[in-house]
Amino acid sequence: MKTKLLLLTLFGFFATNAQTTYNLNWFMGIGTNVDLTIDQGDTVIWTWQDALPHTVENEVGNSVETFNSGTITGIGETYSYTFTVVGDNHYFCGIHGAGNMSGNITVREVLGVDENNLNTISLYPNPASSVLNIELPKNMQTGQITVFDILGKEVYSQEFESKDNLGINILNWNSGSYFLKVVSGENTQTERFIKN
Image (cartoon, rainbow, N blue to C red; front, side, top):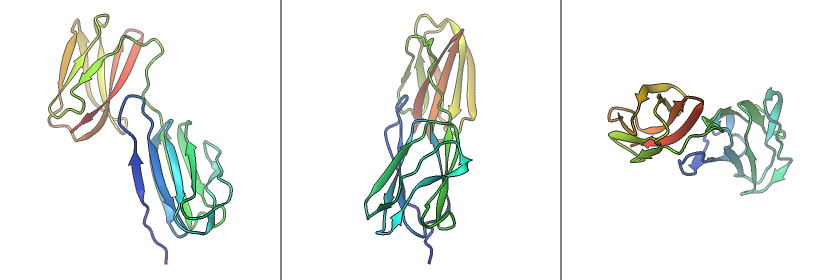
């Protein structure tokens, strides 16, 4: 009997440019379509949950990255891989086949900080529940503030002019992680915040 249970545990702290580690329990009969969406730089760790030999390997022609654990046997054994290329990575167990043990890791682009970075902006409180305050450096006289949800959808946009501090009312927003992007001239800075 195939079990379709996938135990997925998220570790890591939400902070600017922080990577996250995803743990997947890997065992015979896990079923197909074990899919996960992660950010560039995140790591996935597969942990063997049975005593059978398994591999974790990319499906040639259907993956943007190449990875292969080789054959590993034993309960509690692990294989980890850090994904750095944006795109899909179909993977499977080379011993038991894609019909019994497979999935897809989708790697999405991380909103980053431009090399021509401005002095640091400050967001507080973080996490926030009603108003997110934005403290801008003195050299930022005009620009655009845009907020994206964790899926990359724009949820807020505002131009600013000659203000050191701004506030965004987030009281009616869904709880979760967001990215706030500030563009001023040639400079860009992105910060992550959490809405309670």
